[in-house]
Image (cartoon, rainbow, N blue to C red):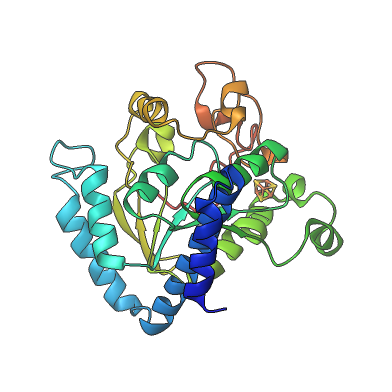
Amino acid sequence: MSTLGEANAFTGVFAAGGGALVAQQRLARQAEWRREAERRERERTPRRTEAELQRIAAQGRDLLHGSQIGAQDEADAARVLAWVIDTFGDRIAVASSMADTVLVHLVSSYKPWVDVLFGDTGYHFETTLATRDRVAADMRVNVVSVRPRASVAEQDLAHGKDLFASDPTKCCHLRKVVPMRDQLADYEVWLTGVRRADAPSRAQAPIVVWDQANKLVKVNPIAAWSDEQTERYIAENAVIVNPLLSQGYPSIGCAPCTSMVEPGADPRSGRWAGQTKTECGLHVI
Ligand code: SF4
């Protein structure tokens, strides 16, 4: 049967009142078609060179950054996303740790079926994996689980059991940084949910920056959002949130490296608690 024929047949089933399951299947089919169209589009449009992307990052900074970090004349998230979509088309990736999914919700409202990259290290809480699955099923995005080259068992064999305890920087490099760098080679820009209010170490996070480590443009559309603004967006838009956020984990990473945090403490103090390490290495601020 032709694609058009399949579509008509599918629409017919839906019209006959197949219910929620059929509606879900239709959305899944639409997503599949869209992904295929975007894959073809990517093949038609070569990725721009590093020099071109660096020049675009500089233009983005001039256009969107105000007189200084946090100034009134800084562009808001809507303007930032309009520039990103207009400039990069389908070579856009959104990174998500599957904590509050605010950025995923926001970007998908402007760019449905955008690719959402989740670093699936093999060490996540079950609750986080369930949140990822819910996002994939319920939201109009294409969730991509980015996995390391080695399984946890293979890593244990090569580097000793529980590398996260003996050398967390190496563990993060192997399980997060390298796989994400490989994946990002297919895009020209990646969007992250980094906010200046996350932690003092992120207080100077820019909106647009050239990501030298990953060789593409990096954009933080909600860098200026306060905690209150973020919570308001979640409530007003019924954004999917990881239940761990309300169970004492205000910042969520891999299970072995994430601890509960006392109310009022630095939200990121539960990440690699008791160590000097504060970032996995993906986000160089
Ligand atoms: S957060 Fe911990 S378990 Fe996860 S990759 Fe880094 S060191 Fe390994």
